[in-house]
Amino acid sequence: MATHPKIDYIELPASDLDAVQAFYSAVFGWTFESYGDEYLAFTDGKLDGGFYRSSSVSSAEQGAPLVIFYADDLESVEAAIKAASGTIVKPIFSFPGGRRFQFTDPHGNELAVWTHT
Image (cartoon, rainbow, N blue to C red; front, top):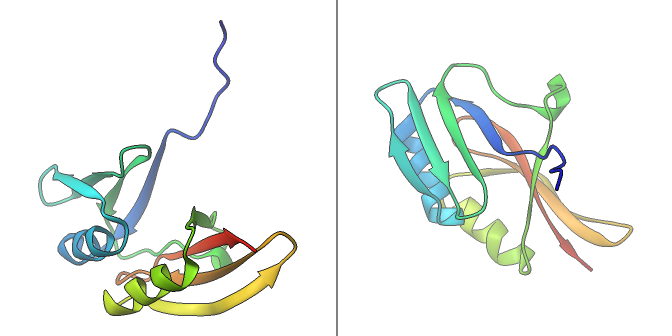
């Protein structure tokens, strides 16, 4: 049986690996494994990825792909992001079939969270 290619791993830049670990642990419950001073791997049980030490940021405005999370309770995730020192860059807005908002993590990487209406 053939397997179709799928997204398997995501990597994002971060200059302060401790700060992104604290943020994503608090907001999304990710667990981490350090691979020295330059790389920090994460998992949420379904998605795996990592943060590599860099001063660059992932921004949709600059042409980077926008990683979008799904959540049943959009407002509680928004509150958790604010409490963990994330910044809401596009407040909750509606679109056909749902609502979402966009945020930056402590490093400045832009991501989003959406839910059904």
